[in-house]
Image 1 (cartoon, helix red, strand yellow):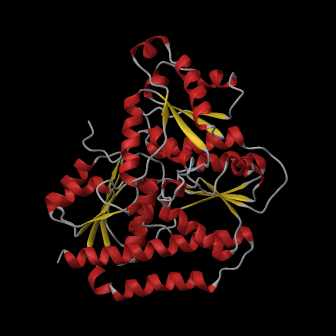
Image 2 (image 1 turned 30 degrees about the horizontal axis):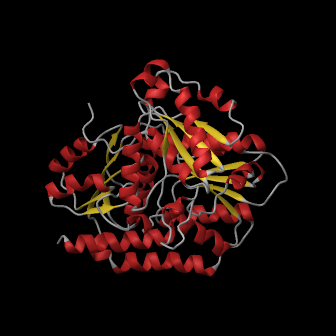
Image 3 (image 1 turned 90 degrees about the vertical axis):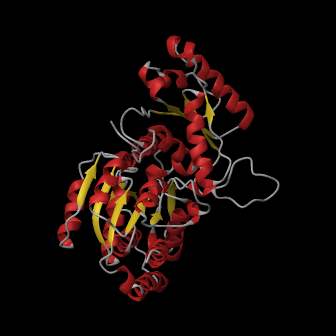
Amino acid sequence: MKVNPPKMCQFLGAVFATLGIYRAIPLVHGSQGCVNYVKHLLTQHFREPVDIATTGFHEMSAIHGGIDNLTRAIENVAHRKQPDLIAVITTCLSETIGENIYAALKKINEIEAVAINTPSYVGAHVIGYDNAIKSIVAALGRQGERTDKINIITGIVNPGDVREIKHICREMGVDYTLLTDITSLDRPLRLPKEKFPKCETSVDDIRNTPNSKATISFGIEGISGAEYLTNFGVESYNLRFPIGIRNTESFIATLSEISGESIPDSIWDARDYVIDAMVDANSVLRNKKVAIFGDPDKVIALTDFAFEMGLRVTAVLTPLKTRHFVPEIERIADENDAKIAVFEDADLYQLHKFIRSNPVDLLIGDYRGRYIANEEGIPLLRVGFPVADRYGYHRKPMLGFGGALRIVDDVTNLLVEGR
């Protein structure tokens, strides 16, 4: 039994990926309750209205099948919204009864529709995101004339992180396609209201991804889509999330290597501001004990950065079991002569038990860590998704040097306040 596991349903990840495509609508093939859960969480985090359609499964659909519901839902969405893409996303219920959504979509000719399998009784939201990126690219991608673009699969990150990636690419003069652009959920309030929130990733951009020069992905969040594109001769570069100094340098060096563009002084200036901030705060940061939880690849990158700041990570937790998480944490522990307790496929109850016997100075993770932080009287650095108990955190980056500077300043001030 799991108590307060810090993970979410697979189909949330697929919805997240779809919302980053201009004029795309996620259509969840399942019950109204499933959609309400995801919509509520996204609205709490982004503080924006979110369009998610549903086929409205009920008892009779579960017994006799919901293909009729699916067909009517697609017709309704196409008529009312006129989207460029409908992503049909499965749930536990539609997967369990064996709905053949691929056969149903073959009969739909009026609108571009993509089927995405996300059975939530296995995996988690990051697996659903990975499945979605591969399904969308495989369904829409068309081979044509080669371009110099670099596909960047951002993973489940915030609009502030996507803006940081865009900033780095533009500073370097790199031509890119984002898979996908979640800045669609952080738009200015302006009348008349946009029918579809704008972002840089269109259906046509995705159709052209098999013609790009290369694809960059981070950890397991999008790796399947990147590997699929290698069938078209698009080279795949799988990196750690660009969190902290070394990981961001690796991302920037990879961009430079692929594109042939040099790295401007403005990028190095941004890095050196982070280093200066770490030096300034060394007396506060040095050897403070930290526990980190969250998605596996973000925890790996955050642990790297914590040691770069002079912190001592004593425990890490991820709700998923992967082949690379434990070896990567062991690498970091060896490099820093540290002992790190590793909780994999675990829940926050286990982490709380550890912290009670091995006190820490700081907890890093999403807002679900607040119960531990409040009970133990330790500060919580809120990062990533979701952060539903604060405002504006979707605009705060953790990627790139801009994100690194924000983390250094926030960690320092949290520790000063906690003295």
